[in-house]
Each structure stands twice: as structure tokens, then as C-alpha cells.
Image 1 (tube, rainbow, N blue to C red):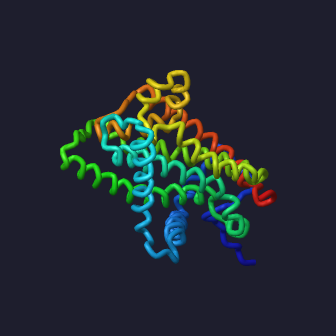
Image 2: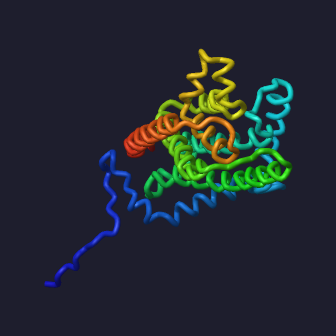
Image 3: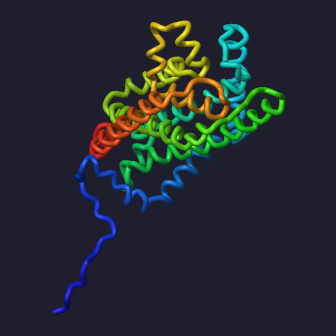
Length: 287
């Protein structure tokens, strides 16, 4: 009687796993799929457009022109002695990265239901691909910010980067963590309650006004002290203010507020991961 060969498996798919098990090793094995999804997002977004990736530059440029006209020229909101276009661009590129990560992650189950219901791969790949694809856009827009910063410096404006600029990688991680965590929480809820997707559509742009994208924190504290705590303790505010302070040398910087934002981002990312891991097992039945 022939002896049966030993069977060994590279991957074992089980219906249940611990909530805190992120399966990062398994996700790493699917890194090629992650890169393909990033490329898909990049190509599909600009497919059949005339200008293509030039929209990476045009979108923030058009935004800062409108902000400069409305908030600087008409509303006369100060910009901490920073050239208005540079002030608005610094806040816009940081906010855009957060809002894009949040809105696209929040509908990841609904948008990819057909693929997720037929093919197995670590579900965490999908939100991670969104974070990385938006990071590419952020890198292009940050290049525009850097070029504009040099331009105004050569024009004689007091642009003075300082040592806080070395916190830049941390700021990107915090923005990505907040967008990913909140997005995963919302995506889990929207599998049953689609109404939340409509709330996100108009709610995220409104949320921008509770951050310091179009005004400095000092202005909010001076003019509206009774409401400034809402802006001050918005975790995005400290990230944007630190970014401006590090690269432009203007604005406010607080280790306490940055530590607060870090703690909030860590808690939200942890909760988002737990909820995402729980819902991914049964989302096909409800999506």
C-alpha cells in the first residue's frame, strides 16, 4: 500500500479569526495585488480625460484661487503673515489627503462588492490601496507646494522652515491613520445603513471649516473664543498647524495638541481595525 504524501499548505483560509489579528504577514504576501490596485485607482480615475495627471496640479491651484478671492480678498481673513496662496495650499493638500482617504475608504465594501464576493484575499488590502493611491496624489501636490514655497522665498517673503519640519513623516502617518480608521468604521456601518454614505458626501466638506485650512488657529481663538475649542481639539487642526509651522515658520505649534492628535488617531485606527475585521466576515450577506 502506497504511503500518502504529507500535505502542507502555504495559506489556510478560516471563517473565524481574532479581532486583533491584522494578518499583516498574509497581507504582505499579497503585496503585488496591492500595487495592482493602486495602479488601477490611478489609471481609472484619469482614464478618458484630456489633461490626465495634470489635474493633480490644477485641482489645488483652482481651489487656492477661489479661497484667495473669497476668504482673503472679500472676507479679509488674515493668514499669519504668510502669502495667502501658500497658506491655503498648505492646508488644502493636507485636508485633501485626509478627505480622500476617508470618503473612499468609507465605501470600500459597496464599491468592490462584486470582487470581494468572488475572490479571496486579505480584505485590508482594499483600504490600504486607497491610502497608497492617495499618497501618490499627495506627493505630486506637495511638490507643487514646495515649488511655490521656493518661489515666494525668492520674492523676498519671510519663509523660514525649522526643525519641526522633521515631524513631516509623522504628520502623514497621522492623516492616513485618521482617514483609514474613520473610513473603516463608516464602511462597516454603511453595509447595512446606506444613508450614512449621503451624510459623508456633504458632511466631510463641511467638516473642513472646523479645521484651520482657510484661517489660522490664532484668529479663531481671538475672534470666537467660546467656539474655538471645537477647532482647537479637532485632531486635524494640530496636524495642519504643525505642517505650516515646520515648513513656513508661521502659525502655532504645540507638543500637547500634537500628542492629543496622535492619541486620537491611534484609538480611531484601532477601533476601525477591530470593527473592519468583524464586519468583513459577513458583509457579503448585507451589502
